[in-house]
Image 1: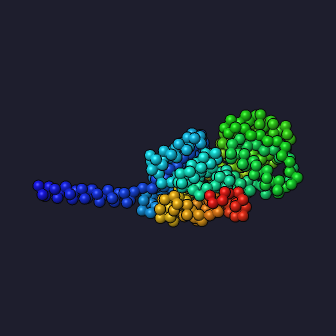
Image 2: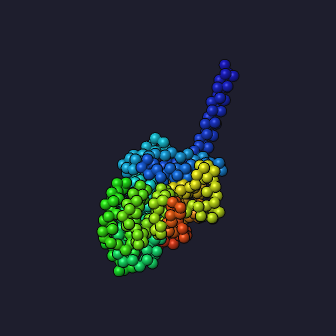
Length: 401
Protein backbone atom coordinates (compact mmCIF):
# COMPACT_ATOMS: atom_id res chain seq x y z
CA UNK A 1 0.00 0.00 0.00
CA UNK A 2 2.78 2.35 0.98
CA UNK A 3 4.66 1.71 -2.26
CA UNK A 4 1.44 2.32 -4.21
CA UNK A 5 0.92 5.66 -2.49
CA UNK A 6 4.54 6.62 -3.08
CA UNK A 7 4.17 5.67 -6.73
CA UNK A 8 1.11 7.89 -7.08
CA UNK A 9 2.88 10.73 -5.25
CA UNK A 10 5.86 10.61 -7.62
CA UNK A 11 3.54 10.34 -10.63
CA UNK A 12 1.67 13.46 -9.53
CA UNK A 13 4.96 15.22 -8.83
CA UNK A 14 6.21 14.35 -12.31
CA UNK A 15 2.99 15.56 -13.89
CA UNK A 16 3.24 18.80 -11.92
CA UNK A 17 6.85 19.36 -13.02
CA UNK A 18 5.95 18.66 -16.66
CA UNK A 19 2.96 20.99 -16.52
CA UNK A 20 5.09 23.69 -14.93
CA UNK A 21 7.69 23.22 -17.64
CA UNK A 22 5.03 23.51 -20.37
CA UNK A 23 3.69 26.68 -18.78
CA UNK A 24 7.21 28.10 -18.52
CA UNK A 25 7.80 27.40 -22.19
CA UNK A 26 4.29 28.54 -23.14
CA UNK A 27 3.38 30.65 -26.13
CA UNK A 28 2.98 34.35 -26.82
CA UNK A 29 -0.41 34.95 -28.40
CA UNK A 30 -0.65 37.76 -30.94
CA UNK A 31 -4.24 38.80 -31.59
CA UNK A 32 -4.70 40.28 -35.08
CA UNK A 33 -7.84 41.86 -36.54
CA UNK A 34 -8.37 42.83 -40.18
CA UNK A 35 -10.74 43.28 -43.13
CA UNK A 36 -9.71 40.06 -44.87
CA UNK A 37 -12.90 39.55 -46.86
CA UNK A 38 -13.28 43.22 -47.79
CA UNK A 39 -9.67 43.96 -48.85
CA UNK A 40 -8.17 40.66 -50.05
CA UNK A 41 -5.74 42.21 -52.57
CA UNK A 42 -3.69 43.71 -49.74
CA UNK A 43 -4.51 41.42 -46.85
CA UNK A 44 -3.90 38.00 -48.36
CA UNK A 45 -0.22 38.87 -49.01
CA UNK A 46 -0.15 40.64 -45.63
CA UNK A 47 -1.19 37.43 -43.88
CA UNK A 48 1.49 35.50 -45.79
CA UNK A 49 4.06 38.05 -44.61
CA UNK A 50 2.95 37.60 -40.99
CA UNK A 51 3.13 33.82 -41.29
CA UNK A 52 6.66 33.98 -42.70
CA UNK A 53 7.80 36.19 -39.82
CA UNK A 54 6.25 33.91 -37.19
CA UNK A 55 7.92 30.90 -38.80
CA UNK A 56 11.33 32.63 -38.88
CA UNK A 57 11.13 33.83 -35.28
CA UNK A 58 9.96 30.48 -33.93
CA UNK A 59 12.66 28.61 -35.88
CA UNK A 60 15.24 30.87 -34.22
CA UNK A 61 13.96 30.02 -30.74
CA UNK A 62 10.98 32.33 -30.36
CA UNK A 63 10.84 35.38 -28.10
CA UNK A 64 12.01 35.28 -24.49
CA UNK A 65 12.01 31.47 -24.71
CA UNK A 66 8.42 31.27 -25.98
CA UNK A 67 6.99 30.52 -29.42
CA UNK A 68 4.71 33.01 -31.15
CA UNK A 69 1.13 32.05 -31.99
CA UNK A 70 -0.85 34.22 -34.40
CA UNK A 71 -4.64 34.34 -33.90
CA UNK A 72 -6.52 36.31 -36.58
CA UNK A 73 -10.08 37.61 -36.80
CA UNK A 74 -12.02 39.25 -39.64
CA UNK A 75 -13.64 42.56 -38.73
CA UNK A 76 -16.07 42.56 -41.70
CA UNK A 77 -14.91 46.12 -42.45
CA UNK A 78 -16.96 47.24 -39.43
CA UNK A 79 -15.60 49.18 -36.42
CA UNK A 80 -18.20 47.53 -34.17
CA UNK A 81 -17.22 44.04 -35.31
CA UNK A 82 -13.55 44.92 -34.87
CA UNK A 83 -14.07 45.96 -31.25
CA UNK A 84 -16.13 42.83 -30.55
CA UNK A 85 -13.34 40.73 -32.08
CA UNK A 86 -10.78 42.50 -29.89
CA UNK A 87 -12.86 41.82 -26.79
CA UNK A 88 -13.19 38.14 -27.72
CA UNK A 89 -9.45 37.81 -28.40
CA UNK A 90 -8.67 39.21 -24.95
CA UNK A 91 -11.33 37.44 -22.91
CA UNK A 92 -11.56 34.04 -24.63
CA UNK A 93 -8.23 33.58 -26.41
CA UNK A 94 -6.22 35.42 -23.73
CA UNK A 95 -3.98 37.11 -26.31
CA UNK A 96 -0.99 39.09 -25.06
CA UNK A 97 -1.20 41.95 -27.58
CA UNK A 98 -3.53 43.31 -30.25
CA UNK A 99 -2.40 44.20 -33.76
CA UNK A 100 -3.53 44.76 -37.32
CA UNK A 101 -6.30 46.84 -38.95
CA UNK A 102 -6.39 48.09 -42.53
CA UNK A 103 -9.20 50.64 -42.80
CA UNK A 104 -8.51 53.90 -40.98
CA UNK A 105 -11.83 54.19 -39.15
CA UNK A 106 -11.36 50.66 -37.83
CA UNK A 107 -7.82 51.49 -36.73
CA UNK A 108 -9.22 54.44 -34.77
CA UNK A 109 -11.87 52.25 -33.13
CA UNK A 110 -9.25 49.68 -32.07
CA UNK A 111 -6.94 52.44 -30.84
CA UNK A 112 -9.73 53.78 -28.64
CA UNK A 113 -10.46 50.23 -27.40
CA UNK A 114 -6.77 49.79 -26.52
CA UNK A 115 -6.84 53.05 -24.58
CA UNK A 116 -9.95 52.06 -22.63
CA UNK A 117 -8.70 48.56 -21.85
CA UNK A 118 -5.07 49.61 -21.33
CA UNK A 119 -3.83 46.95 -23.74
CA UNK A 120 -0.96 47.30 -26.22
CA UNK A 121 -2.07 47.73 -29.85
CA UNK A 122 0.22 47.90 -32.89
CA UNK A 123 -1.68 49.29 -35.90
CA UNK A 124 0.01 47.81 -38.95
CA UNK A 125 -1.65 49.40 -41.95
CA UNK A 126 -4.29 52.11 -41.21
CA UNK A 127 -2.91 55.39 -42.52
CA UNK A 128 -4.96 58.13 -40.86
CA UNK A 129 -2.83 60.63 -38.94
CA UNK A 130 -5.34 60.70 -36.09
CA UNK A 131 -4.16 57.30 -34.84
CA UNK A 132 -0.92 58.80 -33.52
CA UNK A 133 -1.82 62.49 -33.39
CA UNK A 134 -5.30 63.84 -32.56
CA UNK A 135 -6.54 60.49 -31.19
CA UNK A 136 -3.12 59.26 -30.07
CA UNK A 137 -2.84 57.39 -26.78
CA UNK A 138 -0.24 55.64 -24.67
CA UNK A 139 -1.11 52.11 -25.81
CA UNK A 140 -1.31 52.59 -29.59
CA UNK A 141 1.64 52.56 -32.02
CA UNK A 142 1.54 52.63 -35.83
CA UNK A 143 3.94 50.91 -38.23
CA UNK A 144 3.19 52.10 -41.73
CA UNK A 145 4.07 55.48 -43.27
CA UNK A 146 0.99 57.61 -42.58
CA UNK A 147 -1.26 59.64 -44.84
CA UNK A 148 0.63 62.82 -43.89
CA UNK A 149 4.02 61.20 -44.54
CA UNK A 150 3.13 59.87 -47.98
CA UNK A 151 1.38 63.07 -49.04
CA UNK A 152 4.44 65.01 -47.84
CA UNK A 153 6.53 62.84 -50.19
CA UNK A 154 4.24 63.63 -53.14
CA UNK A 155 3.70 67.37 -52.64
CA UNK A 156 7.21 68.57 -53.63
CA UNK A 157 6.78 66.67 -56.91
CA UNK A 158 3.30 68.14 -57.36
CA UNK A 159 4.62 71.66 -56.77
CA UNK A 160 7.35 71.16 -59.39
CA UNK A 161 4.63 70.65 -62.01
CA UNK A 162 3.58 74.30 -61.55
CA UNK A 163 -0.06 73.48 -62.29
CA UNK A 164 -2.57 75.99 -60.97
CA UNK A 165 -5.95 74.26 -61.27
CA UNK A 166 -6.22 70.96 -59.36
CA UNK A 167 -9.03 68.44 -59.00
CA UNK A 168 -9.16 65.98 -56.10
CA UNK A 169 -10.82 62.56 -55.88
CA UNK A 170 -10.86 60.37 -52.78
CA UNK A 171 -12.92 57.67 -51.01
CA UNK A 172 -15.29 59.30 -48.55
CA UNK A 173 -14.08 57.92 -45.22
CA UNK A 174 -11.34 58.81 -42.74
CA UNK A 175 -8.32 57.85 -44.87
CA UNK A 176 -9.51 59.62 -48.02
CA UNK A 177 -10.72 62.70 -46.19
CA UNK A 178 -7.45 63.15 -44.31
CA UNK A 179 -5.34 62.53 -47.43
CA UNK A 180 -7.25 65.14 -49.43
CA UNK A 181 -7.13 67.70 -46.60
CA UNK A 182 -3.38 67.21 -46.09
CA UNK A 183 -2.65 67.46 -49.82
CA UNK A 184 -4.57 70.73 -50.12
CA UNK A 185 -2.89 72.15 -47.02
CA UNK A 186 0.67 71.21 -48.00
CA UNK A 187 0.35 72.12 -51.69
CA UNK A 188 -1.18 75.49 -50.79
CA UNK A 189 1.81 76.14 -48.52
CA UNK A 190 4.26 75.16 -51.28
CA UNK A 191 2.35 76.93 -54.08
CA UNK A 192 0.11 79.72 -52.74
CA UNK A 193 -1.59 80.46 -56.09
CA UNK A 194 -2.99 76.93 -56.43
CA UNK A 195 -6.76 76.52 -56.96
CA UNK A 196 -8.84 73.44 -56.22
CA UNK A 197 -11.54 73.49 -58.86
CA UNK A 198 -13.27 70.14 -58.34
CA UNK A 199 -13.67 67.54 -55.63
CA UNK A 200 -15.24 64.09 -55.87
CA UNK A 201 -15.69 61.87 -52.80
CA UNK A 202 -17.47 58.60 -53.66
CA UNK A 203 -18.25 56.04 -50.96
CA UNK A 204 -15.52 53.44 -50.45
CA UNK A 205 -16.04 50.51 -52.81
CA UNK A 206 -19.04 52.13 -54.50
CA UNK A 207 -17.54 54.57 -56.99
CA UNK A 208 -19.66 55.54 -60.00
CA UNK A 209 -16.49 55.92 -62.00
CA UNK A 210 -18.10 57.27 -65.17
CA UNK A 211 -19.86 60.08 -63.31
CA UNK A 212 -16.73 60.88 -61.26
CA UNK A 213 -14.48 60.99 -64.32
CA UNK A 214 -16.94 63.16 -66.20
CA UNK A 215 -17.33 65.60 -63.30
CA UNK A 216 -13.56 66.01 -63.07
CA UNK A 217 -13.25 66.48 -66.85
CA UNK A 218 -16.00 69.12 -66.82
CA UNK A 219 -13.99 71.20 -64.32
CA UNK A 220 -11.06 71.35 -66.78
CA UNK A 221 -8.30 70.94 -64.18
CA UNK A 222 -4.61 71.17 -65.07
CA UNK A 223 -3.81 68.23 -62.76
CA UNK A 224 -5.51 65.63 -60.56
CA UNK A 225 -4.76 64.30 -57.10
CA UNK A 226 -6.17 60.78 -56.69
CA UNK A 227 -6.64 58.81 -53.47
CA UNK A 228 -8.85 55.98 -54.81
CA UNK A 229 -7.40 52.48 -54.48
CA UNK A 230 -8.24 48.81 -55.12
CA UNK A 231 -11.37 48.18 -57.25
CA UNK A 232 -12.34 51.87 -57.06
CA UNK A 233 -9.01 52.78 -58.67
CA UNK A 234 -9.39 50.19 -61.44
CA UNK A 235 -12.85 51.49 -62.35
CA UNK A 236 -11.67 55.11 -62.24
CA UNK A 237 -8.68 54.39 -64.49
CA UNK A 238 -10.86 52.56 -67.00
CA UNK A 239 -13.43 55.36 -67.21
CA UNK A 240 -10.75 58.06 -67.19
CA UNK A 241 -8.95 56.38 -70.07
CA UNK A 242 -12.21 56.00 -72.01
CA UNK A 243 -13.04 59.69 -71.58
CA UNK A 244 -9.52 60.97 -72.21
CA UNK A 245 -9.43 62.44 -68.69
CA UNK A 246 -5.71 61.81 -68.24
CA UNK A 247 -4.53 63.01 -71.66
CA UNK A 248 -2.37 66.08 -71.28
CA UNK A 249 -2.98 66.12 -67.50
CA UNK A 250 -0.58 65.30 -64.73
CA UNK A 251 -1.86 62.91 -62.07
CA UNK A 252 -0.44 62.58 -58.57
CA UNK A 253 -1.76 59.44 -56.91
CA UNK A 254 -1.44 57.98 -53.42
CA UNK A 255 -0.59 54.25 -53.10
CA UNK A 256 -1.09 53.53 -56.83
CA UNK A 257 2.44 52.15 -57.23
CA UNK A 258 1.70 49.35 -54.77
CA UNK A 259 1.55 46.07 -56.75
CA UNK A 260 -1.76 45.20 -55.07
CA UNK A 261 -3.35 48.08 -57.00
CA UNK A 262 -1.00 48.60 -59.96
CA UNK A 263 -0.79 45.03 -61.26
CA UNK A 264 -4.57 44.58 -61.75
CA UNK A 265 -4.61 47.59 -64.12
CA UNK A 266 -2.61 45.53 -66.67
CA UNK A 267 -2.81 47.11 -70.15
CA UNK A 268 -4.97 49.97 -68.81
CA UNK A 269 -2.08 51.23 -66.66
CA UNK A 270 -1.63 54.97 -67.26
CA UNK A 271 1.84 56.29 -68.00
CA UNK A 272 3.60 58.94 -65.96
CA UNK A 273 1.48 59.20 -62.83
CA UNK A 274 3.51 60.33 -59.81
CA UNK A 275 2.87 57.72 -57.13
CA UNK A 276 3.94 56.15 -53.88
CA UNK A 277 4.37 52.39 -54.06
CA UNK A 278 6.56 49.32 -53.83
CA UNK A 279 8.77 48.32 -56.81
CA UNK A 280 9.68 44.90 -55.41
CA UNK A 281 11.44 43.94 -58.65
CA UNK A 282 14.12 46.60 -58.37
CA UNK A 283 15.12 46.90 -54.70
CA UNK A 284 18.67 45.61 -54.35
CA UNK A 285 19.42 46.16 -50.66
CA UNK A 286 20.63 43.15 -48.63
CA UNK A 287 17.60 43.39 -46.28
CA UNK A 288 15.12 43.30 -49.14
CA UNK A 289 16.92 40.57 -51.06
CA UNK A 290 16.87 38.31 -47.98
CA UNK A 291 13.16 38.99 -47.44
CA UNK A 292 12.29 38.48 -51.10
CA UNK A 293 14.08 35.14 -51.29
CA UNK A 294 12.52 33.85 -48.05
CA UNK A 295 9.03 34.96 -49.12
CA UNK A 296 9.38 33.46 -52.59
CA UNK A 297 10.73 30.21 -51.15
CA UNK A 298 7.74 29.84 -48.82
CA UNK A 299 4.93 31.11 -51.05
CA UNK A 300 6.27 30.67 -54.61
CA UNK A 301 5.18 34.22 -55.39
CA UNK A 302 6.61 37.72 -55.21
CA UNK A 303 5.80 39.91 -52.22
CA UNK A 304 3.31 42.77 -52.31
CA UNK A 305 3.45 45.76 -50.02
CA UNK A 306 1.02 43.98 -47.71
CA UNK A 307 3.62 41.22 -47.39
CA UNK A 308 6.20 43.76 -46.18
CA UNK A 309 3.77 45.33 -43.69
CA UNK A 310 2.62 42.01 -42.19
CA UNK A 311 6.18 40.67 -41.98
CA UNK A 312 7.54 43.88 -40.44
CA UNK A 313 4.68 44.14 -37.93
CA UNK A 314 5.42 40.71 -36.45
CA UNK A 315 9.16 41.44 -36.33
CA UNK A 316 8.42 44.77 -34.61
CA UNK A 317 6.33 43.00 -31.96
CA UNK A 318 9.10 40.43 -31.44
CA UNK A 319 11.72 43.17 -31.11
CA UNK A 320 9.57 45.08 -28.61
CA UNK A 321 8.88 41.99 -26.50
CA UNK A 322 12.55 41.07 -26.52
CA UNK A 323 13.51 44.56 -25.37
CA UNK A 324 10.76 44.60 -22.71
CA UNK A 325 11.54 41.00 -21.61
CA UNK A 326 7.77 40.87 -21.17
CA UNK A 327 4.39 40.95 -22.90
CA UNK A 328 2.81 43.20 -20.27
CA UNK A 329 1.27 46.25 -21.90
CA UNK A 330 3.04 48.87 -19.76
CA UNK A 331 6.41 47.22 -20.36
CA UNK A 332 5.73 47.06 -24.11
CA UNK A 333 4.75 50.73 -24.24
CA UNK A 334 8.05 51.68 -22.62
CA UNK A 335 10.01 49.32 -24.88
CA UNK A 336 8.39 50.56 -28.09
CA UNK A 337 9.20 54.21 -27.40
CA UNK A 338 12.40 54.64 -29.38
CA UNK A 339 12.46 50.96 -30.44
CA UNK A 340 14.74 50.33 -33.42
CA UNK A 341 14.25 47.16 -35.47
CA UNK A 342 14.94 45.74 -38.93
CA UNK A 343 12.54 45.61 -41.89
CA UNK A 344 12.91 44.72 -45.59
CA UNK A 345 13.21 48.50 -46.14
CA UNK A 346 16.07 48.81 -43.64
CA UNK A 347 16.17 49.90 -40.00
CA UNK A 348 13.07 51.62 -38.61
CA UNK A 349 12.44 53.43 -35.31
CA UNK A 350 9.22 54.07 -33.38
CA UNK A 351 9.31 57.71 -32.30
CA UNK A 352 8.83 58.24 -28.56
CA UNK A 353 6.89 61.49 -29.03
CA UNK A 354 4.03 60.18 -31.17
CA UNK A 355 4.47 56.38 -31.51
CA UNK A 356 4.83 56.65 -35.30
CA UNK A 357 7.43 54.49 -37.01
CA UNK A 358 9.89 55.95 -39.49
CA UNK A 359 9.16 53.32 -42.15
CA UNK A 360 9.25 55.12 -45.49
CA UNK A 361 7.88 54.52 -48.98
CA UNK A 362 9.02 54.52 -52.59
CA UNK A 363 8.21 57.48 -54.83
CA UNK A 364 8.23 57.20 -58.62
CA UNK A 365 6.14 57.21 -61.79
CA UNK A 366 3.90 54.59 -63.35
CA UNK A 367 4.71 52.97 -66.68
CA UNK A 368 2.72 50.65 -68.92
CA UNK A 369 5.44 48.19 -69.86
CA UNK A 370 4.06 45.80 -72.46
CA UNK A 371 0.62 45.69 -70.85
CA UNK A 372 1.97 45.47 -67.32
CA UNK A 373 1.99 48.23 -64.71
CA UNK A 374 5.35 49.00 -63.10
CA UNK A 375 7.05 51.84 -61.27
CA UNK A 376 10.03 53.63 -62.86
CA UNK A 377 12.37 56.43 -61.77
CA UNK A 378 11.70 55.51 -58.16
CA UNK A 379 13.58 56.23 -54.97
CA UNK A 380 13.08 55.37 -51.32
CA UNK A 381 12.18 58.22 -48.98
CA UNK A 382 12.94 57.65 -45.30
CA UNK A 383 9.84 58.35 -43.23
CA UNK A 384 11.89 60.29 -40.68
CA UNK A 385 12.52 62.98 -43.31
CA UNK A 386 8.84 63.80 -43.82
CA UNK A 387 7.55 63.66 -40.25
CA UNK A 388 6.73 66.90 -38.43
CA UNK A 389 8.96 68.10 -35.61
CA UNK A 390 8.40 67.29 -31.95
CA UNK A 391 7.12 70.84 -31.37
CA UNK A 392 4.53 70.45 -34.13
CA UNK A 393 3.46 67.03 -32.81
CA UNK A 394 2.87 68.54 -29.35
CA UNK A 395 0.23 70.80 -30.92
CA UNK A 396 -1.47 67.84 -32.61
CA UNK A 397 -1.33 65.11 -29.97
CA UNK A 398 -3.20 65.17 -26.65
CA UNK A 399 -1.13 65.95 -23.58
CA UNK A 400 -0.08 62.95 -21.47
CA UNK A 401 -1.60 60.39 -23.86
